[in-house]
Amino acid sequence: MPDETRRAIAELVNGDARRALNTLEMMADMAESDDSGKRVLKAELLTEIAGERSARFDNKGDRFYDLISALHKSVRGSAPDAALYWYARIITAGGDPLYVARRCLAIASEDVGNADPRAMQVAISAWDCFNPRRAGGRRTGDCPGHCLSGLRAEKQRGVHRLQSGAGRRAGSP
Image (cartoon, rainbow, N blue to C red; front, side, top):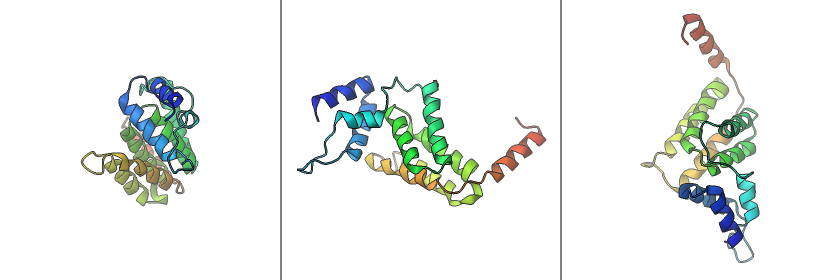
């Protein structure tokens, strides 16, 4: 890995070793091989993965909600490439994959609904992959991809709307 890339990663992760490893894994997965077959981790790839230089991921600030919103909108718009991009941005910024897994379950229930009843099971299975006693480690990296691309199914919010209306009529918050 070139020194320039090493310095850029160190600056991006601000001392967070977990985030550095996540960033390196994503770079390794996306890197192109040189003529000898070795993957080359260039600073340009880091820029592509991380987007703009990000502050610490605080799970409460505008940046957090902007990234989650972009992920949600890309899934709603049936754009799996965009969804995977925003997922990578969230993880690179230090976001919790389990939070994304919970959002996927909500999307499967609220947005996809009965248009594809299997969507909820796919989301639950992807969430389950993050359990350290299950798959754990690097192999769980594909689980969100399977789930996010599967949620591109036709959307049907009927049950969600009916349930929300029933709750309002019953006086629940």
